[in-house]
Length: 576
Image (cartoon, rainbow, N blue to C red; front, side, top):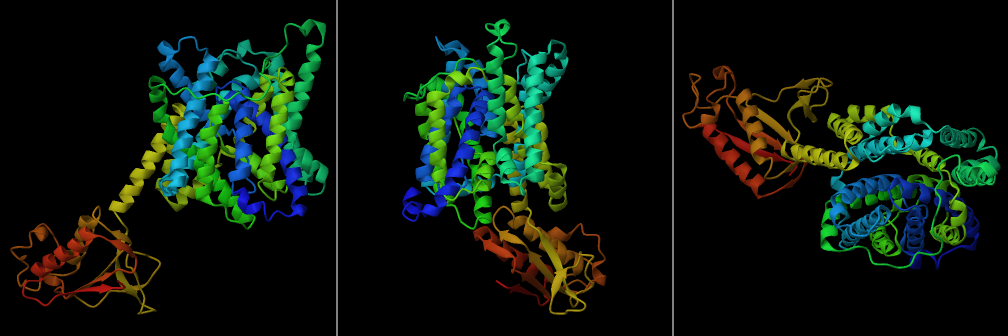
C-alpha cells in the first residue's frame, strides 16, 4: 500500500511513472468504453469503474504494474448475467429501462463479488482459489476469447440486429446468415480499424527496439486508432447529407460529469437472481489478476502481497457500484503495457485516474461520434491475448491428459453454451480429478537397481534394469498422503502385491488359510511362491497420515499375520 512505497519514493522514478501512466491512461479510456459495451452496460459505466479502480489501487495496491479497470473476461461474464437477470426480472422491473436494469445488475454483481473477495482477503483465505486449476482457467479464458470474438463479429463487419449475447456458435451462424443485410460503411470502418491496429503492432514488433518513436506508437495503437476514427466520424457528420443520418452506427449520447453516488439495487427479489453468479465472478476477478501480478513481480524482482491484492480487489469492486461502476480487475494488456512503458511504482495508477477523470469531464461530446464498429475492432484485438494456441494444449496433453481435458471441456462448452456453464463444468471437472487423485494415490512395488544396489525404483519402469528383492520380501511405496479417502484402497493394493509375490507360510498344498478370505479367488500357483517373510513400507513420499490411515496399518498388520499363519512375519516402516 501507499504507506509502504511513498516514503521511499525516489524522484528519479517519476519520469518512468509519468510516461507509463500517460500511455496506459490514454489506452484505458477507449478500452473502458469498449468493455462497457461488451458487458451490456451503459457505455459511461466503464469510465466510472476505471476511475474508482485506478484511484483506490494507488492507495491500496502492492504491484507497480497492475492497472485496474474493466477487463474482457469479466465484462463478458457480466453480459451473460445481465441477459439472464433482465429476462427473469421482466415482470418486476416497473419503470426501469433496459439500460437502467443492466446498470443495476452490473453494480449489484460487483458489490457482492467484491464483498466476497474482501472477506477472503481479510481472513487470509485466498488459498481456496488454489482449487481452481490453471488448466481449467486456460480453457475458460480461451473460451472467453472465442466468445468475445463472436460477440463483436457482427459489429465489426456491419451486420445489424444480431443478438450477440447468444452462445458463440449461434452468433457466428446468425451473422453469416444475415450477411445480405451488411452495412458497407460499418464494414469498412471495422475492418480498417482492425487493420490499423495490426499494422501498428507489427511495426512495434519489427522496429520498436530500434526506434523509441515506433515503440511508443505501437504501445499507444489503440487510443491512436480510436482517436483517428472518431475524428473521421466527426468530419463526416459535418457534411450536409449526413448531418441527420450518419452513414454508420455511432455511440451517440454519453452523459458528462462525475458520477453521483448512489446505492446499488439491493431488494431481495432482485439480489437473489444475482447471487448464484457471484462466486464465479469473484474467482474470475482474482485468479487472472493475481497470476499476472506474480508473473511481472517475478520478472521485475519484487513480490506483490497476494492477500493485500485480494483486499484491494474486493474493496474496489465493493465501492465502485456506489459510483455506477461494474466489476473490474487487473487487465492483461494494460498491465503489460504499463510494465513495458517503464512503470516504477503504483503512482502510474493515479496518473491514469487523472486522465480518466479528465475524459469523463471533457470528452463525452466527442464520444458521441465514436463508431461502434471501431469499438468492436478494439475489443476484437484483445482476443489474441486471451486465446491460447495449440502448443499450450499439446503441452498439457504431454504433461497430464486430465489437464488437457479440463481445458478442452471448458473451451467446447463455452463455445456451444455460455461462459457461466463452461466455468462451472471446468471447475467441477478439476475438483473431481483432484478428489480422484486424492482417493487413488500413486504407488509402486520397488526393486533394487542392478548397478546401484542401495537405490530402489518402480519395478514397472522400463528405463531401469532392476533386481527383485530376496524371496518373501515385498517393498511398497506410496506417494502422497495416507488419509481416510484412500486408506482402504492402499490396503487392498498392498494385499494384492503380497498375494501376487508370496504364499502363506502355513501352506503346504496350495490351499489358503481358512480365515484369509480375501485370497480365495487368486489364480496364482501359491505352492511355487516363497512364503511371506517381510513387508517393507517406504514412507519417504508420504506427507501426512490421519487416524484412518493408522487404523489401516493396524488392520493390514493383522490381515498379513493371519495370512502367514504360524510363519514368522515382520512389517517394517522406512523413512517415517
